[in-house]
Image (cartoon, one colour):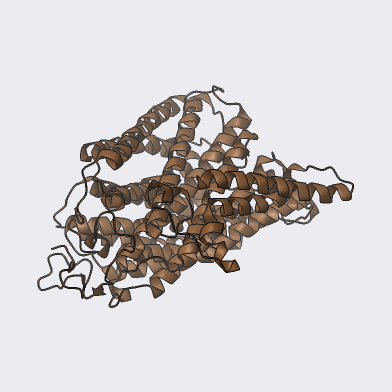
Length: 608
C-alpha cells in the first residue's frame, strides 16, 4: 500500500538525513546527535521520502525524466495514494480531519475530567499543559482546513462547471503534506509534548521541552499546505469558470472559499516566519525574541497575531458561504442581499489584516495604539453584521425545510451571534484588561470557532454528504447528533462566561475551590456534548456503507454540483455547461435555469 511505502521511505529519508547531519557534526568535533538540530535538518529528507513513497514519484516526478506518469488507481485504493482528482482529495481531507477532530475532542474530554474538581486527578501540571496545547493546535488545524480542504476541494470545481482544480497535482501535494503534520504532533506528544499552547509564545517556546521543535516543524509544514491550497483555489475560481458564470452568478460558497483563500495566501507567511525565527533562536543562537540579548518577545506576538487573527476568518468566511448556501436551498429563497453579502466577505478580507493587536492590549505595547486597534476591531463587525442580515433575510418568510443540514445552519447563526456580541468586550480596552486570559475568552473563542465554524462544518457535511458518498445519511441519527451537540454546547460554554467574569484564569491545571461547583457542571455537560459525536460517527460510517442510495439532486437545488450523479463522474461533466441564470432564483417568475447543456437530453439545471 502506498501509505506504508511512504512511511518506509520517510523513515529511510529521516535516517539518511540524521546520518548526514551527524557526520557533519562529528567532523566539527560535536556530538553525533542533537535533538533539535538533527530533527530540523533531517525532516526535509523524511518529508521527501514520504511524498515519493505515497506516489509523488510514480504519478508526478517520472515525467521530469521523460517517463510516463502512472494511471491513478480506482476503488478504495485511490484514497491511499497520490491522486489528482479533486473529489478524491476532498474525501481524503474530510476523513483525515474528521479523525483528527475526534482525537482532539477526546483530548478535550480528558481536560474536562481533570478540571471536574480541584487538585490533580489525571495529569500532573506539565502533562495538563501538554494536553491543552495538543488540543488547541489540532482543533485549530481542523477549523482552518476542514471546510476549505474537504468541501472546497470537492464542491467548488463542480459549482463553477470545471473538470478539476487549476493545478491537480499541486492539489494532491498539498494534501499529502498534511499527514506528516499529524505524525509530528503525535511524536511530540510521546516525547513529552510541549507546554506553550497553540500560540507558542517565547521565551517559553525557546526554552521548553524538545517537543516544541516538532510543533514548529509541523505548523510550518501546515502553513505551506495553506499557502499552496490558497493559490490553487484562487487560480481555479479566476480561470476555470464555465462560460456565462460571471462574478455576479457565482454561488455564495464559492465566494466564501475565494475569500478564505485570499486570507490564507496573504497572511500565512507571517506565522511561518515567526516559527522559523523561534527555531533559529532555539537552535542557532540568534536573538530575534531573546530580550536579554536585544530581541523582543512582543515582536513574536505581532507576527503571530498578524496571521492568527485573519486565520479566524480563514475558518469562518468559508463557513459563512456554506451556511448561506444551505439556508437558501432549504428555505427555497434567493440569498438575500447577495451582492452585499459578497461585498461583506471581501470586506472581511480587507479588514482582517489590520485588527491583530487587540490580542495584545495587556502585552505592554504602546498605549497610543490602543484606541486605533479598538476602533478597527469594532469596524470588522460591520461586514460580519451584513452576513447575518443576509442570513436572516434569506430565511424570512421562507419555506424552511428543517432537515439536519438546516438545523446546523440555523444553530450557526445563533451561536455566532453570541460569539460576535461577546467579542465586543474583548475588543474594548477597559473590559479586555479585566477579561483577558480568563475563561470568558475561552467561551468567546469556542462560540466563534466551534459554535460558528464547526456547526457550519456539520451543516455542510450533512448537506453535501449524499453528493460525496452517493448515500443518504440517517435523518434520525443526524437530528439526535444535532440536538445533543447544540444543547450540550450551550450548557458547557455559557457557564464559562460566568466563571470568566468572576476571574477564573484559563490555561491552568488547578483552580480555587470557589469555582469547583461550576466546573463540575461544565465537565458533566462536556461529556454530554462529547457523547453526541458517537451518533455522528455511527451515522457517517453506517450510512456510507449501508445507507440508501442518493439520487442526483435529493435537495432539489439549482447549483451545478446537484445536476450530476451522486457521486459525480471522474471528469464531472461530459459536456461543460453554459451558465444562463442565478443559482438561487427560487420562486422567481420566469427565471431561467442556472445552467444549460448543449448536448440533447442532458440536464438543464434544476430546482424550482
